Each structure stands twice: as C-alpha cells, then as structure tokens.
Amino acid sequence: MAPTQNITQDIFKTANPAIGVVHLLPLPTSPRWQGDLKAVIARAEQEATALAAGGVHGLIVENFFDAPFPKSQVDPVVVSAMTVVVQRLAQLVPLPIGVNVLRNDARSAIAIATCTGAKFIRVNVLTSVMATDQGLIEGDAHSLLRYRRELGADVKIFADVLVKHAQPLGDPNVATAVQETIQRGLADGVILSGGMTGKPPTLEDLQRAKQAAGDAPVLIGSGADWDNIPQLIRFADGVIVSSSLKRKGDIEQPIDPIRARQFVTALAEGVAERALVIEPESHSMAVR
Image 1: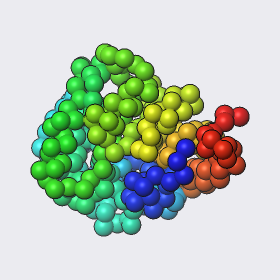
Image 2: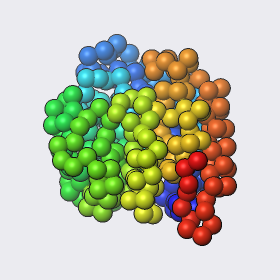
Image 3: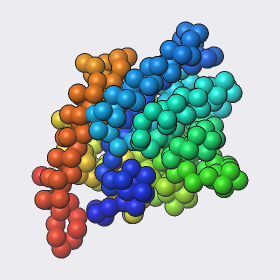
C-alpha cells in the first residue's frame, strides 16, 4: 500500500480520513417531506456540528431520507435545497464537504459542489450498468467529466464500485471494476461497500480493490464501526461512515458526537497498527 494518497491528503489533510455523512431529512417533493425546510437545515447543522466535535476529517451531504429515489435526475427544488444546506454547513464547520445526490444525479452533485465550494462528490454508478430498486442505472462518465471541465471545477469524483443495493449486469469482478472505473471512467478515487447500508465490504474485496487501484484512493463506503475499522483500514485509505455514529446505532437517529469520537480514535489506532504489519521488502500487507 502506498504510504500517503495525495488526493486524500490534499482534501482532508490526512491520508486516512473519516468522512461523516449528514443524512438530510426528507426534502421537498420526496414522499416523506414534512413541509419545513428550516427543520431540515437545523438537523443538518446539528449533525455536522456533532461530527466535527467527534473529530471527523470531512463531511458528505446526502438526500438519504428522500427514498424512494429517482434513478437519475432529481427535481430542481432538491438541488436548490441541498445547495442551501451545503452552503450553511460550509459556514458552520471548518471541514471539507462533499455531495451525493441520490440515486445517481452526479451532474446535480457537481453543480452544487461547484457553486458552494464543496471539494468532492460521490457517484453511485459512474461506469457500467447496475440493476437497482430504481431500475437499470447506466453510468455516464462521458457526460460528467465533460460537464466538470465545462464548469471549470476542481471537484474530485469518488465513484462506487459495484455499488450497494444493486447487482451488476456485467462482470462482478472487483479488480476489473476498479480498474475500469479509474482508467476508463477517470474517477479520482473509488468506494467499496457491502451489499447494503450497514454492511461492510470483505477484507478480500478491499485487498483486491486496493491492488487494482494503484495510486488512487480506496474508501470504505458502508458498514464500518469502531470494532471492525482497525481491520478494514488495513486495505483502504479512508472511510465514509454514518450508521454506527448515530444514537444507539439507529439510522433514524441523529449523530452522537461521543460515538463519532470513539470511531475516529479506533480508526487512528487501526492506521497505527497497520504500519506495524507492512512488510518492509514488498511493501504489501499481511492479513493476520
């Protein structure tokens, strides 16, 4: 494993960031919208503050509670609402912020990021075709990369590989998918998750992904908690985390800063332990 990934270092000021997720309450036009954007903003501010107090290195804002999601473009009011929230959080906490517009509206995500100064976006399907509960989602790296260039944006793209809650129509090989996402989709980094929210990727899949990614960072996208992060981080460069940081581990609850601090501490311990198991000659890591 390379000692430091420039992208993660540049964005998060650490090679091994913990990126906390701000799950937005339902937004306008979503089935569970409650008609009060001020409540959405207040909850987002509460979660961002709790995550910052817990020591995370960055945030990512998602319209998580808008489910069921459209498979591609969201309503313009969702873009407007998320832009307002991201702008407020950028003024509130001194952390780099990312954007994920679910299920796969990467163009809106990069537009929000460009206008708010957010540093990165998450794209669930950048390349290939995935069968999801929203139907077939086709990656469109061609359009997204050209749109980023047209905007003149320095927004990094972290793309899921074999994204959760989905099945690939093509080859499910992790290494091949990582290589194609980086080399053909031009992702700046990749994200590897388990099969669904709250489920971690296997150590074997993480190791294959890391070997295939070369110098590009590999982030854990789901299922990390303070018990398993010391093992998972052996083969990853960072982690996106949410469920385990919520009160009582309940996805519906707000972030608990104490749980966030416990997680960040466990991540740091895992990184330190990882340094002790790197083989000096091959610079590869042994699973113990």
